[in-house]
Length: 155
Image 1: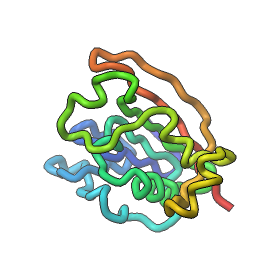
Image 2: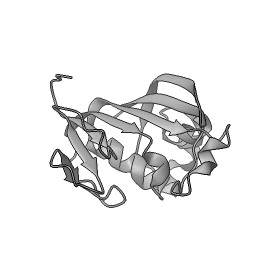
Image 3: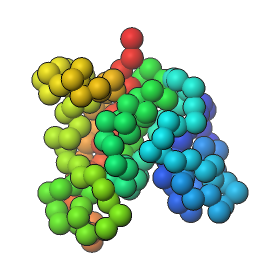
């Protein structure tokens, strides 16, 4: 895929994309930049136009840190495309390396205009603020997965 701007493929493993910044904890492939996504991401603020996070955020311990970092590195209006096993199916719990569990309601805490974000963001340390651009449940052999695209809202 050819794209303008800075596109990130986080937690990519061996599924690297040409023209993208491919980030993963393990970087045996020279096309991958080694990065521990549980520590501050290697970027200045508002650099990325797009983040692809397919089957990765459920492997990260701190939901708030993950969403805050994604929001921090995205440009205003930048998009984050997330695919995550949803807790509506047992597949979310089958992989022993999954350490956080998500469903559609998990994203309410990061959604602009949501009463959950309005009420808890300051107390929980949530800086991330997104608009939901698209959402869909995809059925897989491992159970339902939520695909949600978020747009970074910044002043």
